[in-house]
Length: 378
Image (tube, rainbow, N blue to C red):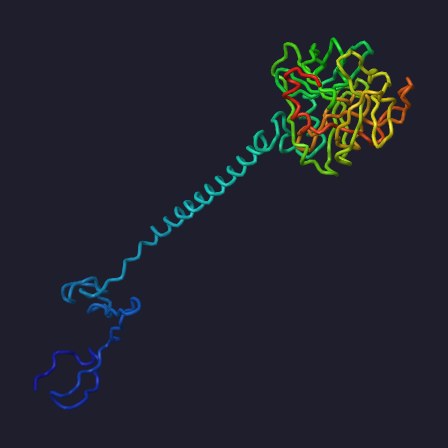
């Protein structure tokens, strides 16, 4: 029997099973290799030596120590540092795309809103001065935006002097007002909100609608008013009135639209040069409403039109001025107001608004502009 060269106790001993050549070998000193799960339907076994910590070498069949050749290999995972680097980039890209979508949508909405506010063909609104977004819906915002477009008119006729108001509609000085303010008058003096004075000529009048168009001489670069759509006006809408009552240029009052389609009858002024008494000095413009006469006798020659009724304070001198909605659009031309004073009184102490004012709807004016510009008079 050959003696073992190994010192006693150098290796642990294991029990044998069976006798002689049939004996079973002792169990290994390490756990058997376990299959590696890579996904449904695929099982991989580690390469030889992987379980005991060896990771390669020709003595273990080559390979990478984890996967055997010829078997499906799982996709290598990217290094952690690269994964961390890519996530912020992907996040930034997603944010940029979202921002582009939101920005484009906002630009589209703004564009649509801008087109609706300036497209005179689609909405029936003639563009001009508008109220800033921050001031829209406030009386002060409307007053600040529209006051430069309202003028004071002083006219002289054979019947005397009259004071009224007007609205600038073109930058070169076209102004709309009431016919009864300028009928038969020459000359006509116009004072802007800045205090600058112009001479104006009467271009055309329409006594049936109590409208007139005058033109400043030598004017340019003026701020113009936006003519809105009176068909969209509703009872209860808040409005602002701007004019020159009693010669007080740029006076602002506010109220609501209190009724629609009121039949108002006023004296019809022709081309005979016979004008009514002046609004300054306490004399009133007579009109009829509901079968009653107010502010005096309208005479035998009258005309009737459908008017907007408002409780915004109107006083002598407001005739021809603007009734404005809270978007800064002209919805009517102020034309008549009820006063408690008697028609024959020369004392203006009883004059003033009692909450019954009337305005010619702006759609009536827009339909009549061509006639007025042509210099026609009905």
